[in-house]
Length: 342
Image (cartoon, rainbow, N blue to C red):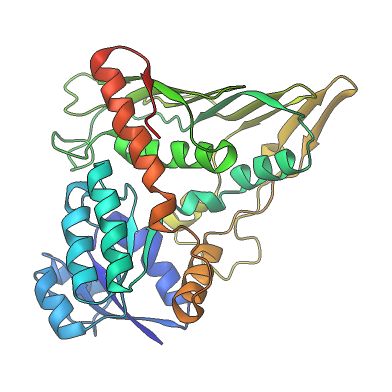
């Protein structure tokens, strides 16, 4: 059994990690680093709580650290955990700079520890469906793709993700998922052009973005809006044999928010009315959405830690995501298309 130190105890830790730690019998929470011991005790009454990471690493001596703290803390905390000889799973965004990302990958390699990033949306059903359609050549050669995470949140909330500060804002929150999925499908783009905006009254950080990724034979448009009150477009993938259009988000996040058990037989399965449509010259047909499964991320993580098999999301596979995001910010600031340096 792998002893696990949970670093941070906010929404991410309680919603996206703790259910899977409790579900997987090969992982055991040995401690929590948090400034709110009462909040931890109400959920994990028998687990030690440490006020800082150094104490947690010293006393818990974890096999694995899971970092769920605000984004600007990730790089330093990952480095501390690697120095202590612990494997690390860090929430996205991995880091806020390409320099930090490459340095941490090198540190993990030198320390003979493994470093993973929680890109759980590689296990979204809609994304897995797009992967399947492309592998089966049902769309032919893809020429355009639109990929969006839109929401209706017109009023800012008082939380670190929406307040001012490094790593705050919707681009650092949802951009890593959308860019990672695009790179997983099509590889590294040649150039990027971005418009990152703060449109909500009294907003302290960005709340809408539109980013175009340029490839030699296609364009990918990713984005998010805080003002979409209707049915949201998730994917529109257009090829020379047909196109696939999908509305609505993968259900797993809402299931986790609602406290639905991971043992549910229907976990990750979409209702038929949520299926996307495949359109081609011969007609239009619904496409059964592949069942998404965040449980699989943790299954693969445990296997990787115990046997050395491939990671569900290795840090080195996410370095390109941070590079694209960094150059997207440059594009936004300079108001121009920026070539990706390879």
